[in-house]
Image 1: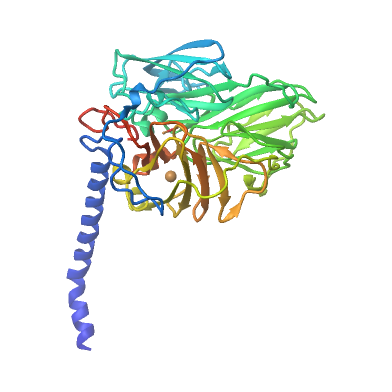
Image 2: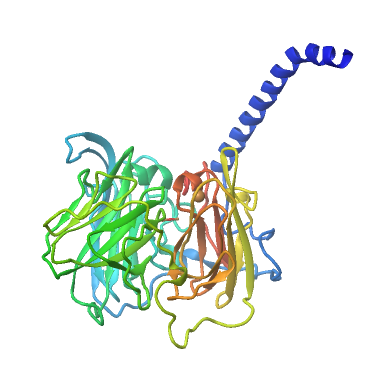
Length: 491
Ligand code: C2O
Ligand code: CU
């Protein structure tokens, strides 16, 4: 009786108190996040001393004198030199639905020009910034360029300010579907339009495959509109029955896109630019494409003449191959998995035995903050490696959405999913889509000395803290992230 009464008396004080506490907590987490996002000055090459993410492997002290990231440049190319100019500018962009947007463009368009080069070419791109106040950079997503060419503001260079320019040079060593985007305030600048496709065509394009018509399809979100190669209406490819199309799909948005192919069976012939070994025919499977990922689909047109590739994120943006009768809509299909797709390669070069390093990265969320092992951004201890070492990294998605996890400078191999080793084709990626509850083990060879960002490619998550470094011992940078320099790569 008395207890009840006192509880009742406490209620009027208790509720406001609780509310005040909640508001206080929310506000402080909010400011914590702002402080994390905008530190005053951080050297991303020099916070290696705490290595809490390391599991087992011992940390080695590195020599005090280092090699500057800036000094690591491209070697000789076997192919031609291909030069491009990309100028970033504020643009009133008129879409093909008549609407006008305040966009940021390369050479007046968004996406920027599709760059096509050949395997082995030396690619030289001069970036100019006309009037993007915060500065811009170019990051070559998926291409393993030398450290100085990686385009990360505050790590590999300063953001290129209005009136300035920066010339990138690298060798396009591996054929495949890649893309480029600004890595200064990436979550803002990619959405404003500063991105585009770069395709590295293989020297021997038709080695085993039949001759195919090539189409690159880049999806992006420009402000709130999803566009396909800059269009609001989808894409039409004129091909005839019996012809084969290689469709290079790139997800430049922040959310996973689920593709369906209606009207013909198809193959996933490459993921993130890397060919699959003996990819089988798929019929009606949904292909989930994480943010930042690329899938190359090979489709042979049936006699009926028409195939429609749809994407659940934008029903208005179908890719129509050929003409003829409309194929039946597909729904409720099973989802493609690379875990047992294709066939293993004979004499698989997978290195046996213990890796030199082991890391575990738990991807999660804390109120407004996206975290790795419970920490955010520069508070996350970097992974450290030495050139020539091997690393096994466990990725655990503990929630907060899909986390398409991206490594700069490296192609990694997926070893297992939820404890089950892959049984089909080897899978090499630069961005791995992880869904809640999933656990992956990946393997990489430390073969590209530098200071490399590793982050979720839902760039909103990266901007909220899900971004860290893979640092080689002994590599230094003179650039700084923070409000002082104005370099904020993932804001
Ligand atoms: Cu496309 Cu650091 O990313
Ligand atoms: Cu994420």
